Image 1 (tube, rainbow, N blue to C red):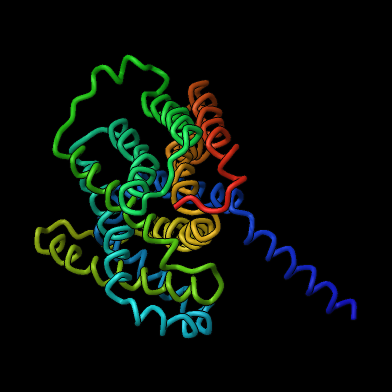
Image 2 (cartoon, one colour):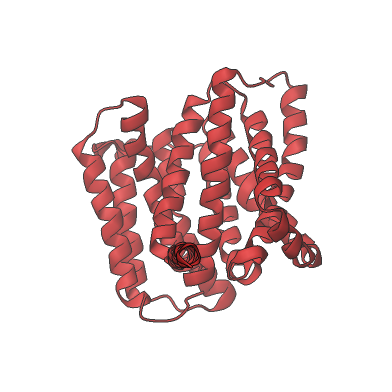
Length: 317
């Protein structure tokens, strides 16, 4: 009997965790921030498209090993909407990351962070245009405050840096990537379901789509002579990227969107560049600046402003 009681308590704790959207989103964006640091560490250790393809191949292996039953239970639903799953995996996973990697060769990290910070605004506007979802003043104010935090961390605390920005083809690539990810986020709530086996089966479909779509890109990288197999350090980096940002963070984000909608969940994406900067301090030994602490406070403040009234209402998008 004690063993059964302990098991039930563990299940209860897990259920409460899985029903807490804010905790899910903080952990998800922490993983996404870790992806930014790991991607920087991957330079010279593994080529971009090799990393993109292999990360999703590893995710598929993890799902088949740990969640085979849930994947099987959710597969009929995935098969019935395979076109949408293929498009979402291509846009939200493969194209977004591939464009991000390529854009980094043409533009600065400042530009990349600023443009990526526009995703929450695009989700809000997309919900308004496509679904006629109401946009409240608190949401606009929250997005503005959070975006100020992104600008602060992207500029390194020197706002005059923003006045010297120059935009090029890399910025257009990143802008296209943010549009694709916003579309993916908007489609998540109606497609992924509430959680459990259905969500895991749906995620398996997305990961499979991302893997298949990435193969032609890998072939192009090989044909152009840019293919670099992973070094020993590259394998470790790739394992982390597959497990944390590609597997755990994506599942947590999908669940959070199912709970509170893409508009409210999307605002938390502004934590990604801030967490990325803070993790760079811990992992790469970069100096901690006051601007990073202030940026985190601004982003969290923006989320609090937007959520003050949003949390009272049921769904937004």
